[in-house]
Image (cartoon, rainbow, N blue to C red; front, side):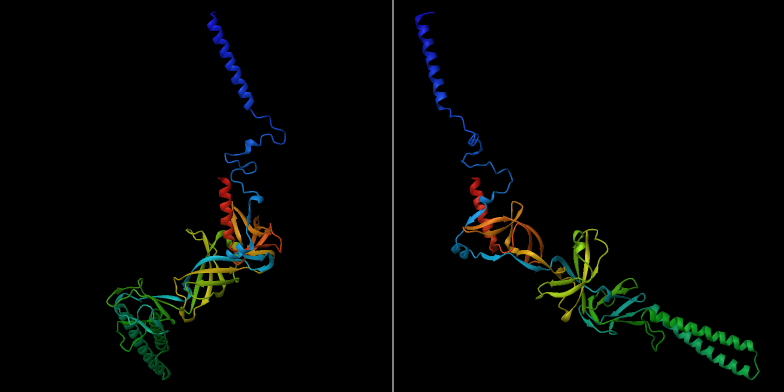
Length: 404
């Protein structure tokens, strides 16, 4: 090996030794037991994530919001105390106003015929016995003629019977002739009765003209014309409705009850109804709970019967029904608007010396205004009763800043 090669190898070894020394000098000293692994929990921004697993709620220390009295007033946040209260649980349900089916009548023609006139219009208020539709029917003329013939036979049979009675009393005719006349009289009476009952059953009155084909359909009750397909000149028969009359002095409000809420609903329980733009709530009771669920909706029907003064409630009108449970005492309650949801947990913002803190709670019953707190809050605790959504928004900003 030449001298030049020896010098080059020695120089390279010296450089390697210097680099190794530099690397050992820059390595940090080993961590103590109390600090071992601390750096592994810090992210690129120096935030400690030891207690923040994916999806976990922030620690209580991170759920506080600093806010002075002046800021609380400026934000319109109302403060109240958690307190005992009487709660009457409500079941809020969608509903619809319907005509009382037990007081609704669809009228049809008694036989085939032609509509001559319809003296009422859709929406007309009608009285019982009022003329609604006039029809000309050949069948009606025939039935009336049959009644007239039956009456003539009855008159003849009555005369024959009287004559035979007189002859038998004078011992001119035999007893069997009187018996035959009596049988004929009875048969004629049955014929008249059958012809008259057929006309009465179909609402067809007898007229002086025993062959008249004109028949008048009259209102069977006081009500309102809610459907009127019949028009003058139309051919009709027994299967085609002419018009429908509904007594709207009383209506049904039918609410849809989900299957999982049926245990809370029973006949006779109080109900409060809000319908359309009608002012205030209407008081009623549940008159009927359907025994089966709808095939499409999988819901049962709860029916409330209400008087309909001045016909303010119209069939087809949308409504809501609040079914009221039995009132009972709740040891701790807060205002409904105080409860917020954060990371799938219900919270109430509790007043602290520096502002507010989000407190996890477990809720119970509610009457639509106040909610029972089963766990997480004691009676007398001061909390944000109004404007808590602003605190939730502020807490969300803090969480977002912490994650940056």
